[in-house]
Image 1 (tube, rainbow, N blue to C red):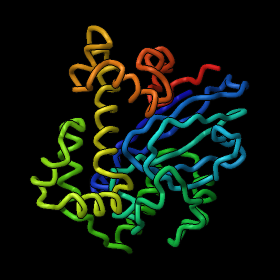
Image 2: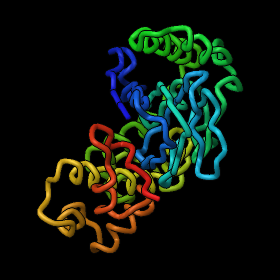
Image 3: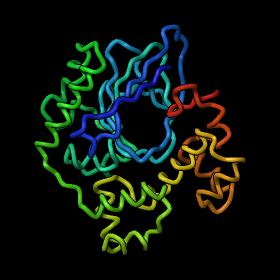
Image 4: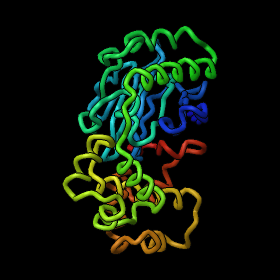
Length: 272
């Protein structure tokens, strides 16, 4: 597989973390199966018409174009043949900021893009299929997103943005009481506002941030042994660290490292 990230235009950097493409290698003819990891970000996916569609763990085919919300667990996906996919990794609160949605309604779920109440959403996949060059596809997607932000003009609560910044910067190692004091919200208000804009509770988002911080060190091998990762990221013990990986990556830290495909660490190979 080939996975490539593309930086967003400057005016979309508060909404988009990166655009990406994923495609099978030219010689791929056998079924492919791999795992996606919880990363704290919603997204958008467009699959090229005519290619082999992605299927979930039950064998159900994904829509050709869809928005998805926060994922709170690892997901197994597969495809039976060649594919070419274009996607967007949004910033955590983008479903509200760009589309005016209650993010909690899409947690561990997706919305077929033609069902989204937005101009051009219904035929976006067809429009992109008519464009061969990836940069032009990204430009087209960027225009679609700009229209969304201009139409909704939805401002994410500044205290939610502050909470997100602290959790991301600390790798999830900020306690809920400290977060409440820093942003000046009660526990109930913070939970409600955070779930509406991000889709999950601040506690769960913090756990995913800590998992992602550990995963980054695992990928760059910035550790001596696996127990060092657990200690540095302030897990209670190595067993706690392994449980977090099994929840958010579907495998232990050692298995994730072994299964990661060269150049595509975001999609570990699913060994059967």
